[in-house]
Image (cartoon, rainbow, N blue to C red):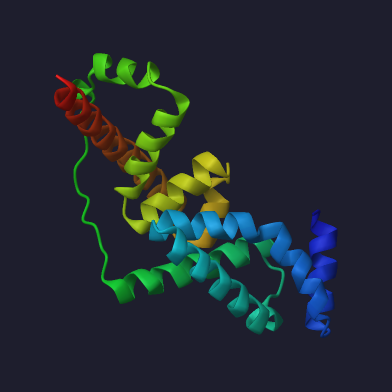
Length: 190
């Protein structure tokens, strides 16, 4: 759906046309679900959160002023809603380490290349799940959804510098998690 169609549908919804909202949901449901899943790590929680997000969006669409893209406004609501869900569950993961470049083991990283795409996807999923909710969303938006630092900043409220730091730290942590999981699987086979 292009920008003009989204703008038209938003105006229709503001005018009371509930059916126009269905098109907005269809156009954005996958991304909202992905953001929720990355932050909540549970498919059931992500589905429930995504539904809650669209209810919130419908109820507050009058406040959308088109200063940013509709998708940015929507993803910001999704992000904030997931933060609230996480706080309610008191599921915070403390991350403070980085891997120095000197500790990068080429053999381990080559091992990742030799496994199937499905296995690689599983390792990446585990690594993303090890990140805290903000870092998981930043990684998802930057690498999977290919959003710019500015767009991510609008969604998360972080500066471009903070986003760069989170991406750097997240990559280091993900590397650690992948290496640890590869080592434990290799040692369980031996």
